[in-house]
Length: 176
Image (cartoon, rainbow, N blue to C red; front, side, top):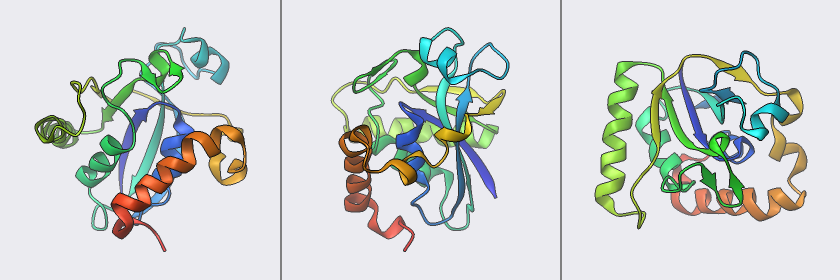
């Protein structure tokens, strides 16, 4: 098993997307990239800790590669808005790849170049690439959030459309 740590706005959105993929063993919502040890959600939301909301994805690279995870990541969030995803604003919502190895860093750099060359987005990619230092799991009520709250208005308006897009573009990658 390998691990990827990715931030692309609200961690609830990314968790719902990645947990649906074949080869993904687990997805944990959490925080990374900040200066405060063991931050609380409220402090991260205020933007005072420097952390990004991220997901840590444990996956079987024989089933789905890190590169494939990143290709999905770059389609299902907007990597061109600095410190923002939709209505969520602040450094905690930045687009970021916290790589775990030199190999992941190289793959991430390559995928960023491919996405820029493919002109998928009209604006330049602003996704931060940084080495992972520490990952802090978010509070329990954030874990599997969409699974337990799919009918909630935020989930319906933001996450459900992402899952529809995932199904449309990556049907062959979804768990049955």
